[in-house]
Length: 87
Image 1 (cartoon, rainbow, N blue to C red):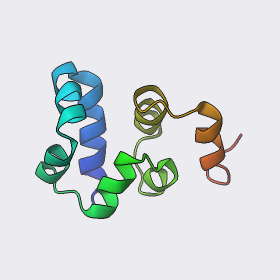
Image 2: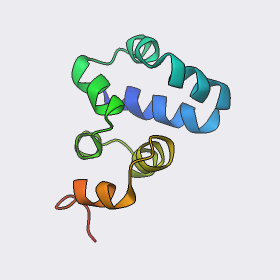
Image 3: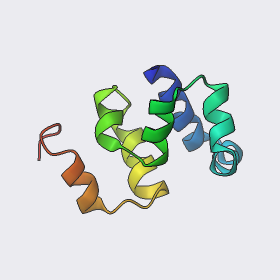
């Protein structure tokens, strides 16, 4: 597992609109190019915010990706982070 690769993907999505669009339609291809394993791919696809946090993925990138881009309900997001992040 490489937290660096996941952070790079999520950060690049934020600063490069063309990459964000490409990632949305070629998610598996991009994740393969960055060397992600099956566990990492699943965590990004679902998104599994608890797992992403535990790997050290930047909190702002996790929030942006999960809540804003993947349309996760904010209450669900908070619930998934119970016990990890302070209220």
